[in-house]
Length: 498
Image (cartoon, rainbow, N blue to C red):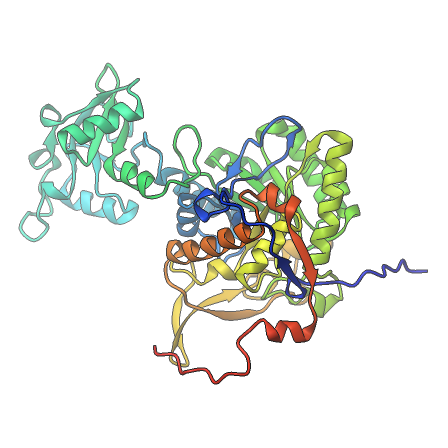
């Protein structure tokens, strides 16, 4: 006979937070949203910590390199989508790692014998206007000069003009030497009013560039998450089919963390994938797994070696898994169940495995509920798909701006690996839809509003950290009529000006 659970499958919309004592310490400026991304032992700390509890979904319509860069600059992390060829995914990872590094290895180099035409083609190819001129045109050749947009005029200079005739020669450059600290490099940039400082070795070979804009960027984004060498952190999604080829390529590209992307993580496919990665790389490669919705699923993936575990099946705004297969669980109930398993696992083993709540978020306050119910961080697709930095097209539909948004289970994504049940390599039926979301503008502007709401709500709960929120939060079920009461009602709303 089937096993029945009598607990009702509930969503975040069925709960509210009850205010706690707001002390004088509970002001938004004191709230810390730092949270662990990967597992750690009791008394230790996670090797990767997020400054905000947000990661972007492993989706074609969400997590490209532009969004990954902007989210990392603001304290979160993106998982570059895996439903693409290995080489192109690895290149997206490299693009993020190259964006912000303090000491940047040059990827735009020419020789003095090249021409202005070569310069313009290289700029179009890389998007970088600073070009290192070396004796052999390599990133580590002997530095002979520098070319920037101030060294030529496209409207007047001949396209066949030699680089040596308009570059800034080495003798006129201010340079740093290998061994210089980033602080010292930035001071030289400031003292000499430079935009770029080349860093060379004792043989005059180019080692790095340090850019003024990177310093300014860091000051403007204090929550930025980066590695000790100042490179932005980025994740990538993998599947359970080609992981033996995909994982090495992503590791070589510099990925910081991986996540197995699947609608159902409670499977032998994921167990074998996790075991292979840990056998080949040990703890040098961090990898999350999921999705699961109960204690059994959590414990299965914990045993397999998962560094974090994702919770949620069928709760995403574009997901129709529950409709198609009748599989899933209300996100709030699933999260509470898995959080209990996580805490018991820590008490028994001394190892804390962070859990990620994936799906089911409709309003910003649902984010606080998810954190209060035990989530360490949240994975979101629809939220990020609305922004300029997402990879989809901005369109006008019905006199309003929208952005395209489609599920990985849709025919458009062709991501059969995510829903792989073995056998023939094909998407047998859709578990996601193709849709639009209202266009919202820049990520940073919207994120600041959302984080402001989260901090204010946490203060009303008497908490200034996520662990404190999980300990102190008081949560109540609500009736359908109290949901109506919570919005504007029994008034005639004025028309909103546009």
